[in-house]
Structure formats: C-alpha cells, structure tokens
Length: 166
Image: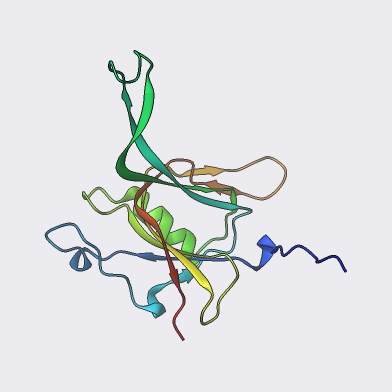
C-alpha cells in the first residue's frame, strides 16, 4: 500500500514577537528571552519566511588550480521576510514593530521573534530570532485596506531551532 507523504499547512503557523527592553541586553550583547506573557501574536501578515545561509569567502590559490571556490567561514547569516500586514490601529504586535523602527537608540529596533511552524504546543518546534526592524511603510490605497510593510529586517541572531516547553 502506498504511503501518503507528510506535509503541513502554513495556516497553522504562529509568529509571536516581543519588544526587547534595554535591561535585558547584557554588556556582551547577549539578550535574555522575554517572558511568555510579553509575546504578542503577529497574526495580521500574509506570509513569513525564515532561513539561514552559511557565510562564505572566496578562495583562489595554486591548490584550486587558479579556480575560485567558495569556502564556509564558520558563520551563518539568518534571513527573515514578512509579507504585508493589514494595519489595525492599536494592534499590540504592529505597535511593537512600529516602535522598534522609530526608536533612535542603538538597540531600540531589536525585537525578539518566535516562529512556531506547527502552531502552539509542548514538544512542537520553535525558531527564535532577534531582529532589527530597519524599515516601516504604511500604505493607504484609495480603495482597499491600509497595509503596513516591514521590508528591511536585519537578523541579528538566529534562527535558532528549539522545542516548545510544556
């Protein structure tokens, strides 16, 4: 009997975000994860994408025969993109993102993100990221809903894979 391939629906995913208070950033730059009650569900976006790429440097020498090859440098570059969100006045998650982009302090734009691809539940996967929100655009069409875009997000840390606690 053939086996049915296992797949998941993106609609079950949950994205939660929390502001990172200044006091939770140590002198070495490490960040203490906010408390569960500080996270707000970021439910108004139409898609979220996270990823990671191994950073490389070009190597060209006699052993490569003069050919340029890419070598891993031991670091990883995280990526996150957020699709357009329907703007709703006083939505807690959208306020966190807006406040981050307008904050003029060195770490003011930092936001802690949890991406829960299979939804909320003990033992399910979670990907943690720390991002810096660099751009925010509010688009008001003559017809249709107001949208907000977060087109330029810098991933400072992560995505780091984990498992949700009980």
